[in-house]
Length: 231
Image (cartoon, rainbow, N blue to C red):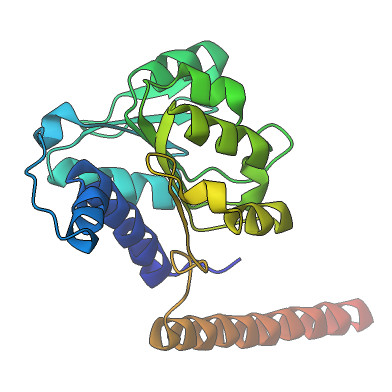
């Protein structure tokens, strides 16, 4: 498994960008510009925007810290309780319900396991405040596509950002009703977790060097053991 600081930074940039995009209503302003319209929209401060991050591993924790630095109200949820400065933590089923109730922008950065598969479903969306935004930057298997579409159509969700998808999600994205006013969702070709060439090369070199050095040490130990048995 590759541990790439640039990969973590790229994920955080993606989460921060889309959080700011929806918090500052840039999508609505873009639609107004296309219609040659100029109407100022009500704007809250970041402390009034409650971001909830599902999964506080390396990427989730880094995203949480960077959003906190921008003064967003950030909380995290995970299977086991994790603590970050300035980021309230929730855990387990009961904690999940409380976590969703206080979340305006929901970010999924969970690993995909049997327990987390299909966790982005109708029940999850129903427990969010009306008009919430969902950002799935983890795995397509977390999402129930039909439930998402229904939540968008009903207005329970105002928007969804999908960095990952299943085959079903890709088919859903092609449906014209996904782009109805108030029910738009954005798909992207997985840029959040794309490694940059230079850090990837540096990581590969380091991993190979450690593997070669480890192989030499293992060979030396085996040779020493063989010699010891003969003496």
